[in-house]
Image 1 (spheres, rainbow over the protein chains, first blue to last red):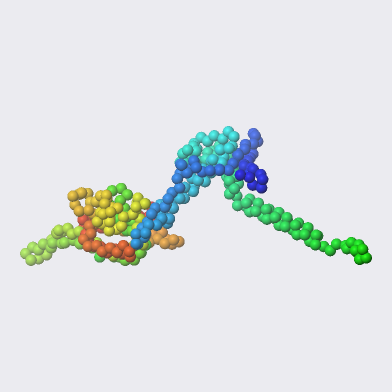
Image 2 (image 1 turned 60 degrees about the horizontal axis):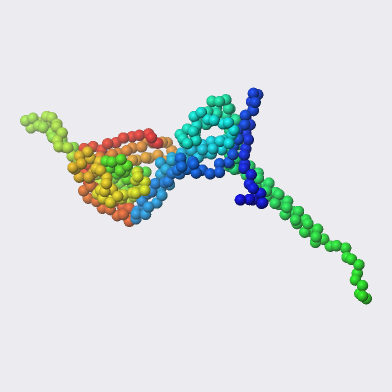
Length: 178
Length: 167
C-alpha cells in the first residue's frame, strides 16, 4: 500500500530517560496486529438470555460479562505497552512474560523497582500511545494542520483565478480597413 | 406469611449439579412462603402444663410473577422455568437439589433481593433460600412470561442470609 505515492513510514517514538551516567532510550513502535494477544486472551462473549416468547438475546448487561470485558481491555492495554516496547534494544523483563497475561501488569512495578520515576514511566507510556496513534491531541493537531494547508491551497488557487480574471489592457485596435 | 416485593429481585432455580442454575429476572408479581409448626399443649389434670413440638410441616411456597428474561450459568442454552421445575428439555440432565436421589426431583429456590440503587447508600443483599422445592400446581404462560406455581419445600424453615453489597 502507498499513500500519495509514498510508503507509509513506521511511527516509532524514542523516549529518553536522562541519567548522568548515560541516557537510556525506550523505543515504542506501533502494534500492527493483535493476533497473538487474541490467542492468549479471547474477547469475552456476552451470555445469552431468553425473553418471553423464547427469543434469545445477548445479555450485554450481565455483571460477570462486564467484569470480563473490563479485564480484557486492561490486558489489551498491557499487551500493547509491552509489545510496543519490544522494539527497545536490549530490554529484558525479569518477571514479565509476553505469553503469560498474568505477568503483564508487572511492567510498572519492575520499571519503578529499577529506578525509573513515576513521571518517566508516564512519558514511556505516552510514547507508546503516540506510536500507536492514540494521542488525541497529536491527531487533532495534525488534522488542524492538514485543514490549514488545504485551506491555504484553496486560497492560493482562488487568488490565481482572480488574477486571471482581472481586465487586461486592450491590444491595438483591429484595422477595419483590412 | 412473609411476602417479598419482587421488584429489584432475581430468583435463581438451582439444581444439585455444578452450573445448574436458571436466573429469573422478575418483572411484576410476588412470592410468598409459609412456615408452620404444630405445638402440642400437654395438660396435667386439665391444667396447661407443658408444651411439646408436634409433627414437622414443610414450608409452603407460592409464586406468581411475570419474568423479563431468563439466563443460565452455562450461558448459551437457557432452559425455561417449566423445563427446570419438571426436569425436561434443556434441563433433562439436571440433578435434584435433594440429597436422596430416589425422591422426586427438587430445586432450591433462591430469592436474591438487592435494594441498592445507583447513587444511594449501599444496602446489604438479602438471600432467602427455600430448599428442595417441589411444585404441586403450575401455570406457565411462556408468551407472556408469566409463571404461577405452588408447592412445598422439604424443610421446616427458609434460610435467610445477608451479605454486603458487591460481595
